[in-house]
Amino acid sequence: MSEWWTYRPADFLMFAPGTWWRLFELHNQAWWPAQVLLLFAGCAVVVGLWRAHRGSLRTATVLLALAWAFVAWAFLWQRYAAINGSATGFAWGFAAQSVGLLVLATRPSLSLEARPARRRAGLGLLLWAVLAHPWLAPVLGRPWVQAEVFGLAPDPTAIATLGVLLCAAAGTPAARRLLRVLRAGALLWLAVSAATLGTMGSAQAWVLLGAAGVAVAVWGVSRTRA
Image (spheres, rainbow, N blue to C red):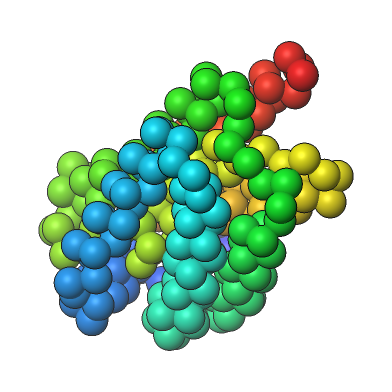
């Protein structure tokens, strides 16, 4: 029997990297052309938040709630659970995040963040999730059909959520607590996913850690200056 210190993190992975990326290929093929619709929806959210249109933040929050619910069912429950027993728990977590976002959208005190720098950081993360994240597939040597798309795949959906929540402010203690919980939920998924990708030896893990780091740093600076 091998000694425990001879094991590497990859030895505990329950599936091969190729199997993981194949999930996105099958997922994208099954839901085409939803990717195009989600691209336009994501861009519309960016424009609405940038121009501070009335109701844009609530619309974005509802869209994110639907995205988390869809990813929970269509990707985590239907696909990922077939190769990783923990995915069922992840699916329930995504469902809870969806409910939380819907509740946030109904809070009367929900408003756009007044600090321009924080809104710009949020919009930057949102733009990355919608427009740039899918490009990681060809850049890292995978086919386009394995690209991860906002609203269909968990990672860009979580990054987009951090972006929108950076643009959000709340006027009551209960709403502020809910905002913190939702931020923590998105950050927790990025940490889990980064650990999985890191175990597979994928450089994409650093992208997720970078997005999480940006969000945490901006929130930290905001609290310091508050």
